[in-house]
Structures are given as C-alpha cells and as structure tokens.
Length: 479
Image (cartoon, rainbow, N blue to C red; front, side, top):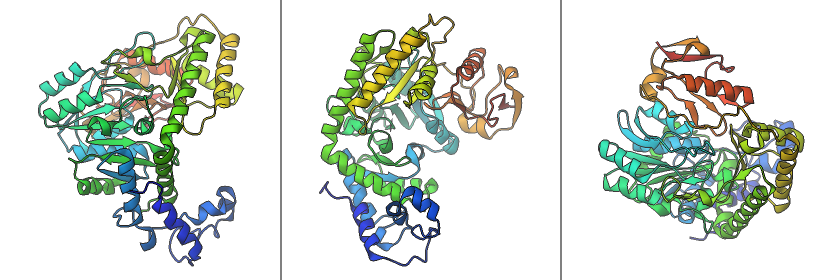
C-alpha cells in the first residue's frame, strides 16, 4: 500500500473545502457557537471536529477512508488487521482481553500490569493466574517474566486461554516474548501484549522485538506515547489467527459511537510519519537516551540503567529509548526528584516513584532539551544530596490473591479506616499514577507491608488514585 497516504486527513481536507452547512452534531457548528473554544484551539482544529457521515466513514463500521487508514496501519506495523482506537490504550487493552476471555476463563499474566488489564478482568470475569516477577534488589523494580515461570503456569493451568506480556514495561524491561508466544501457541493459548510503551519497537533499529514480529496474536499499542499522535489515540493490532469481525464487535461494546476525527486523523498522520521516517527518528531518540545515560552516570550519584541489566531471561532485552534513573543513591526518592525538576527547573518528566524517575524520550525531543535535563539532575545532586537513610526501596509487593477481581469488585463491602484494614480483602484499587500498576487490586489481602507502603508513598507525595475515598483515609473491603 502507499504509505504516503493519510486517507482520513485527506477526507477532512476535502470536507473543509466543501463549506457544508451543518445541521448535525456537534453543536458548536464548526466553532461558530463557541468562539472562546475556537480561539483557544484554533479555527482549523475546530472545523474538523465533526460527526460521522458518508464522506468521512464511521468508526463503528468502517468501509471507506477509516477502513483504508486501518489497512495502512496494519501494513506499517506488520499486523493482519489494525483498529483505530479513540478511548486510549486502556480501551485497546480492555478490548484485547475481552476478545480473548469470557467469565471463568483463566489468563496467565504478570502482576505488574497496568490497572486497565485488571479492569478488563473486572468487566469480563476472567480469572488471573499471576506470574510474580523477580525484583531487582538495587533498583526495587519488577522485572520481566522468566520463561520457566511462564511454562510452569501453562503446565499447571492447561485450561487457560491466553498469556499476557508487558512489552516493554514502563522502565524498559522486556521478557522473551517470542519464546512466550511459542509456549502459548503450543498449549493452544493466545499471546497478548500490552505495548503501551512500545510503539517505537515497530520502527526503530537495535530495539527489542515488537509483539507482532514475535508472533503475538494481539497487541495494544499506545501511539500517543512515543508515536506522536494526540493523547487518547491508540491502535489495537491483531494477527492472522484472530477474527477481525469478532474483535470489532468487542470494541463496539465499549468504544464511543462518536469517534473523534481529531484523534483518528492524528493516528493517520502519525502512522504515515512513522512509516516514512520512523527508522531515522527513533535512531536519534535512542542516541539521545544513550548520551543522557552516559552523562548522568558519569556525573555520579544517580544510576541511569540500561542494557547491562540484560540477563537473558527475566531481563531478556532492554528498551534503550527509556531514560530510567535510580535516585536513592543521592538520598532522594524518585517522586522527590520529580517534584524538584518541575517546581524549580520547569522540567516535567513522565513520573517519579519511590526510587526511580522516568524521562520519556520520543519523536518530539531535541538534544538541547536533553542537555537541560542532565544539567538539572546534576545540580539537584549537588544541592540536595543526603545519605538517604530511611528511604524505602521496594516498588513491588507480591500480592495475596483471595478472590477474582470481578467477584471482589461486585461483592458486598464496607468502608473502614485504612489503619483498620490489615488482614481484610480489598474490593477496590490503590495505586500510584503514573505508572498505574496497582499496589492493591480487588480480591487481594491487605497486609501490614502494603499499608506501610501506601503510607510512605503518600508522605513522599506520590499521586495516589483508585479508592472511592479520594484522600485514601478509608478503604472498601469485603464484608
């Protein structure tokens, strides 16, 4: 196919020139009804915030320009089919799992998944079989799934329907997804990939293998993170063995019937950009990240980790575009460095947790901005360095699973002061966001270690989300 095309974008440009009089939705009528919005976003933007119509196709049942855009995306990403998603990669992940699992089905997955994965289990009633990842003792972060752990889970649960893999994790850690896909297929299971942080794997060189190239059956790809499209736009990729029509039906259960043409056209234009220039773009991104890692490590104090973590199994590969930096050796929690960078240096990084920060490098970054970050980190080390006594290091606590997420979420519950919940079964989520990996998920036992973690994370300024009580002074537990 002609990857220089952007059919949705082209159709919108044709529509703009037609000067159609709108007696449909949206009600702002090309911006005329909301001049403040038009002034803020720009006339050109608001004019193409339009409704589905024959010349522009329909996301729920595409037959023309959206269909062509999906076919171009499938070719560019090496998939059999691709779906444009306008409900974020959360929507892609949930559609992927709902396509593979129904109530009572088992799915093998690592516990360090994004909340969207467990949300999908709440929705469909599937039963998680967790493969608990190893934890790097120095960094305090969870690693990938070992091959033998996955095989053991498959052997012990031959009735499972799918295996899910993070490819890569937020920190850049990759499991051996090719071997895991082969194990899953040999056992008659699907291999699913959460590739929220892996768009660039399809275009860069010297990076870990993409899910589609590794033989996965489905992959949720967050185009807006490293691919350049607008926030909330995503792709769901599927392989030859998956029914396109069935997946479309599942997507249409939850995705809006009023798909945003701003989001869809951004996916279309961004796919074209990556198909034509992605290799060169991500070569530059990787070079910037490598340079920053080297400079940060040479300056002392911090540890910007990379390929040296690779051990051939739980860290099968490492995504070098991720600039992940361990901060505890300068005496600061990651969230503290995160706050200082924003408040005192006007630098906004992706996230800070208890022991690490992540600066997300992608197609819009420039060398001079990377230099500014490196210099700021060095200055923070000079100004704030302490001995770090009393800092917590562990980022992952192995859960005690008592009930399925769906059972716990919908069962009778009571609200208790958080300090009175030790030993009880949680019926809601608790997490730091980002990265959005639950500390507690519905159906898991609340332990003293978890309560200490939550208290420490709150004290350090982590953005805690999930519970019904926004202040996280109370938790819902099973009666």
